[in-house]
Length: 399
View 1 (cartoon, rainbow, N blue to C red):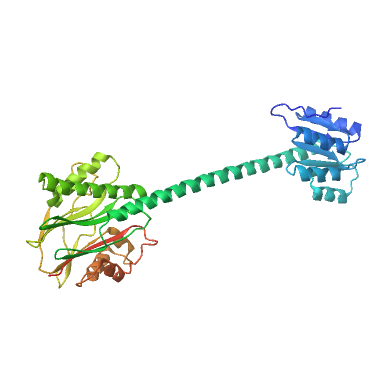
View 2 (cartoon, one colour):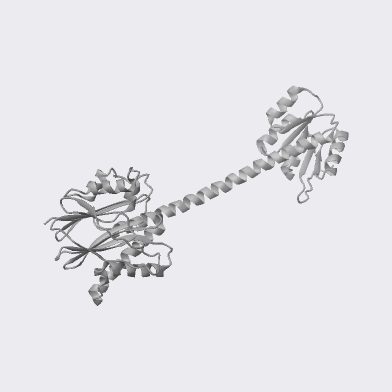
């Protein structure tokens, strides 16, 4: 008697446990003709031994056998190989036997005599398909767990990179409150994400000039934050060119935006930014600024009323032939300048742009305001849930 499952690649291997040699012969012959590789066992004990040795794809087991019967086989195989499909064949025709067999671990039940072998083959195919689905599902679960573990690893790396980037951004930002000569400067940045595409800065150029800018890089996240770091580097280099070589580009907002436009395009980053750059001449009390596609424009409060300073130009880093214009404004002795990023407009509840802009004017129509005061007046104390970064810069001359 063949107690081994002589496997053929690609063929399903079935063990038939049946004590009746005639019934066993008929079943084995039919299954072999149907393309299965079949092994035989004439007792429950022998069948369990074959399973342990050869690991078939499915066990077809008679229910009533002397010694170890079909229920005993089911209990042993259920404990040792719970994923092995088993189909029970019984000649009793008693419903309680079928129920007990299924409760003990059988995957299907067929009664003898088997009038149509196609019924048996259908039960076998169904059990094999179910086993395949279980294996596939387990395989997919393992793959999903591995993918989730890899995703968590990548997310943790991203968090670490983002935290490092955030630290660098914060170190590059000016203080939230500072004084430069007669000016009190205040800025606030509320990022919509962990890393911001907005950037704001102010600095002393020389003994009579203060420079300041607010920029908004296209997009969000790490790539946009990287451009803000690059922007800071370029602006510092233009300042160094003035001090080391006497090159006066940094004193001309239009020339600065034009040069920055060329430098960004040369990086081929496929990123652009809107930017407003201004230079205050504290000796002459004059403002010179250039607007690189930034909205809204700067707001000037002269102690009586607030108004927008007109002046537009193309975004920076988008067009090779971009040109920018210097706008000069004579300032009153005491004044307040406010620069907003367009994220402020997105966050305001008013439906129309003109109403949003009017609300900004109202929010800065008072002396002694800080950036935090203005954002609080606008109801923008956090950027949580906002579609864009929210940034504000206030410059106020107090003497």
